[in-house]
Structures are given as C-alpha cells and as structure tokens.
Length: 145
Image (tube, rainbow, N blue to C red):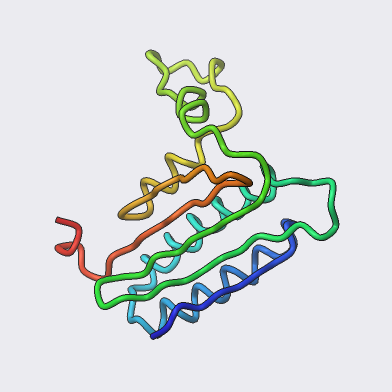
C-alpha cells in the first residue's frame, strides 16, 4: 500500500476526517479494533495540538497528515506550520506529581504522554516553520524489539 496524504484546514471540525481515513487504512491492514481505537485517540491528540499550536491568523492554515503503511506497521505524520512545539517544556509541565494531590496539575503536556501510551513510537520534530509529530503502531508487538 502506498502512502496516503491528507490535508485539512487547521480547525477542530476537520479532525474527524483524519480519524475516518485512519480507520479505513488500519482496517485494510488488519489491526485489531482496540488498536485502531488507540491510534484514533493518539492521532486526534496530535491533530488537536496542531490546531492549538499552529498559526491561527490565517484562513489558509492547514494540517498535513500522511499515513505510511509498511509490512510491519503504520506510521502517521501530522505536520503544522505554526511555531515549533517545545516538547521539553510540555513534558516538564506534565511531570508526575510527587503526591496524589491533583490540585497541582497544570494544563498542557498530557497529550504527549497519552500518545506515548497508545502508540509504539512517538517522535516530535521541530521544523523551521512548524512541528511534525510522527506516530508509529506496529502490527505485531514483537516487531518493536
């Protein structure tokens, strides 16, 4: 299967299109239903981040999504053209609390942890103009090693 590319307006209303496309591709690749649901949540989080952190002052702003199937799995790339996403800052904000007191939770950064929990590999690449999030889910868990 060749790479499939999708370009959507950088608006939350269009993220469902990415999820629908992902479901179709993952179904053809014979992923289990639970794995497809995990991937849909992770890609939705990546797209939400692209909407939030992308340039919001232009009606022409878009999010580029590519689905790259291989024999071992599926890689999904979500790219926006806003300012670079500071991954280390987000991870610091979402650092685990030393106690069970949730009053100290801060907004932001939890999406990265969610993506990491649901996917086999997550990479965040700052670009000259924007950020690219690369999500990979293997067909066979043994392929991770």
